[in-house]
Length: 124
Image (cartoon, rainbow, N blue to C red):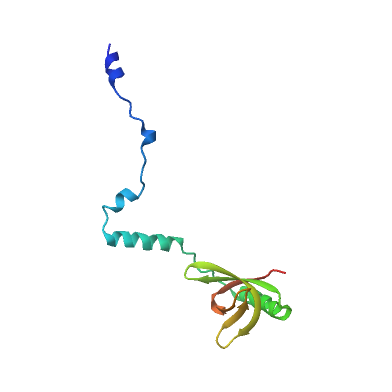
């Protein structure tokens, strides 16, 4: 009965439509909103600083002592500004007054703050 209506109707193919995601909404936002959203996304990605107890500090101290004496290849895990940073090399010295450790990697001599260290592993 209404077959002519259905035959003349063009079917819209939605598979060809591309959604631009959040790009389409950025034009309607104020620059302050965009800046706040970027800051919020950085804050979400931040890792919380691990809470170390006396046993953890003792284990780090013991591992660093072995690493210095044996000149072994060592991996140091540090927490800085909400992210974990990994450095690998040979521990050359530790200065307890300035709370700095010198780690020699194949390219340079790094000075790492002892307060940022959360884990030490001997790789050999």
